[in-house]
Image (spheres, rainbow, N blue to C red):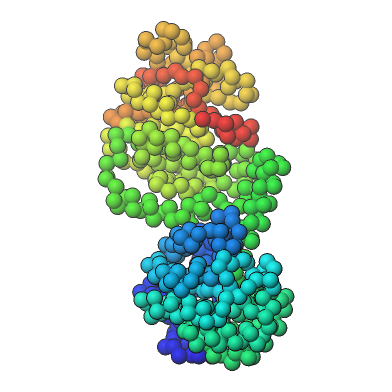
Length: 558
């Protein structure tokens, strides 16, 4: 093998520093004298997964890129569409990428333009095959496919090499003679011509289920230049056989796509058949993992660096420490705040409602499965004693962690989705303490569950629109004759009253049962201590997610 390179063994310039160009790192892989591996990727997220798995380079597969567009591997996706996708892949990673460039998307002039565009996108190499444009995948009636004229294809290689501005950019020539049934002599003849034309490596392709053709070619080739193989059909051959034969690079050419398709088919079938997520959620990646792969944390850090410090006139605190055991297997490993509603976590719906109302500074008190609660752009407070404490303790932890900066604060629960109309209704009231109460409390009672009922100074009716309605009592065991509605879990505190709220919380936590108290105990105690809590009535616009039936109902909420 041609080992004319300054990099060898552990000293190779491969992935060890971002200061080394990707073209140089790829060329070092190709000329290393060892057998290296490229993994197929077809979009940004698959590319990042491949890099995180440890691969030193990626193969932007023509088949896979076409498939993710939902079209055939017959140049049905335009070359500009392919370039756009490869650009996303390059932006998502730091390792070199070789594009499966089909036939170069045309003649020598198309090839020159392709190389220039790839260099602009920091793509390290391109592989072109000696078939006619538009091509057809090699495994679809390959023996009936026509091959390009050798001289014409050599001209295309020369054009690509002349067009590159980076000396380390690589052009690999793919020989399809064995696929087309033209025999070993023709394969070697073409490889020799392409090598002489300036190809940096030869990809020899075979559709056999054994590696016999590949090994024969390696014997005949005698290491005149690096050889790349794609063992899709002859996958049973041990990898050491390739090493012993002197293969420079092995491409796992379509396995990320194929594994993803299999997983998506199983998921789709399960959801269609069972119409629920009960047996599925623990077998798929959590939403937080998608956020991580997308680089959400970097955006959060950038927001803190570049956005104005002013977070608005108000802030929010979401209490989301509970597991939600009534949801069964849905919350076996993740809290109910992260149960998916219409493809997004419940907590994300809550955050979106706040942000839609102009509230950007949002803190979340988490407890059970806290590592699963990872929506970007939020501040997190951990209640690690969530099993032994109640809502009041979570509120106390949130208040302790949050500076009293004079801004208004809205407190709500992590299992309640709502329309931002609720927040706007609370904001209209010029009071120190305001709560939202649902007048449709009887429907809530029919659900046969505990609820935070309230008794007010004025029942809901025409008169309540004109009078200042105050809370008189709050609890789960109010007599039916005393109930005027159900507290919806929203408490808004004017900035100057936050210190008073802290005092009430601290006083209750000092009681023997304080650590297990809920927020309705706080409201009731505040009223008894002489605080005036304004009540605003509304009907609907919210949903308390406690059961699997609620999850189903939440899918229709809006």
